[in-house]
Structures are given as C-alpha cells and as structure tokens.
Amino acid sequence: MRITILTTSLFGALLLSISPLASAAESTAAQIKRAASDFLEGFSSEQAQEGFRVTYQVGRLDSRLSLASCDQPLAVTFSGDPWKTTHPTLQVSCTGDRPWRMFLNTTVSIDGQGLVAARPLARGERVAANMITTESVTVNASRRGVITEPDQLIGMEMRRGVNTGTLMTPDLLSAPAAVVRGDHVIITARRGSFSVNSRGMAMADASVGDQVLVENLSSSRTIKARVIAPGQVEIPM
Image 1: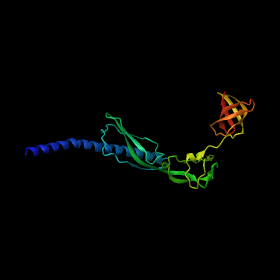
Image 2: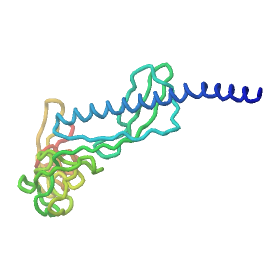
Image 3: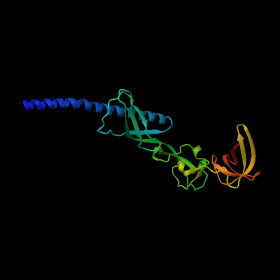
Image 4: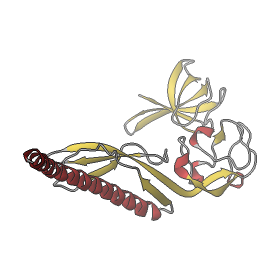
C-alpha cells in the first residue's frame, strides 16, 4: 500500500512539474503565430494600397520549441526579400528580459499586374509601348524580379529573343548604347562649375554611365571618359 501511495504522489508531482512547462510552450507558440500573422496582415494592407493582392500562410512551429515567454511585443521582419520568393522566412525576436530569436517559414503570394511581350521580340530589338501588355502575375514567383512600370522597359534593348506572353524581367534587357564605336562625341572636361569642351571619337560602344575610351581629335591622345548622354562624355579636369 505504501508503494502505491508513493508512486501516485510521484506521478502527481511529475504532472505538476510538466504542466507549467507545456503551458508556457503553448503560450509562446501562440504569441509567435499571432505576431507573425499581424506582421503579414500589415504587409498585405500596405501592398494593397499599391495595387497588389497578398495572400499568406504562416508555417508550422517545431513541436520541440522551447522559448521563454516574452514580456515585450515580439519584433517581426522578413529575413530575405519577399518580392523574389513565395516562401520568405520571418525573423521573430524577443528583446525582453530573456531575449531570443527564431525563424519561421511562410508562404506569401504577391499578385499584381506584370508586363509581358505582346508579340515575339528579337535580340537587339528596342522596346516600344506597342510591344508590351499587362497581365495578372504572381510577382514574387520569379527570382529575377518582375517589371511592373512601362517606363522601365520602353527604349531598352532585348538581350535575347522572347516569345509572345513572356514575362519581362530585368535580365532580359540592356540599356541601348549612347555612343557607338567611331561616333564623334563632345568631350567635356569639368571642375566644379568650370568646363571646357573638345571633340573626340569613341573607341567602343557604351551606354550612359559606362566608361569608354575616347580619342581627343585635337591632341590625338586616348583618354578614358564617362558617358553622360548620347554623343557626350565627361572627364574630370
């Protein structure tokens, strides 16, 4: 009889010792899920104002999770770029008396209007407004990014040919050459507000912002200059 009473007492004590731990774990899990959901709901509302529709699902928490209950509101941020993946990770952290940090998987879809080719486009073809059209796409399904503004496309050149309906991404485009090898260009030597112009000839093709070798036609010297506009380059004085 004594053995039975002792065993029952030990079992009860064990229950008492486990119960608060289980309760604390459940409380922490609920706290994390609530903070993550609130953060994603806020992100969804922000993007809705920009014309995007966001749907999301918070991933499951590890059943072995053992974190102290936080006495401060949890801080939640994306640990990567949610515009380049449909499975971004959230960083959830506590800055209270017993700080901790953990990562939580999510599924996030950002849907909006993307730009696609309205007809087949050839390599080297310069994009015009009538060559593109809009289509509803999951913007963050492409790791290469999606172009949503026509101004980012028009006037650019195709790096390679694409078929009708191809989603336009930055890697498909290149800035057109502002100067072409053999072009006569204006060379501006500048220091502050003072500048001197001379004539030169480009030794290679280059886009705005690129460095290019230019022959100064007055001195026959070859110099390195920066392209600032079609037919114009600049060097520091």
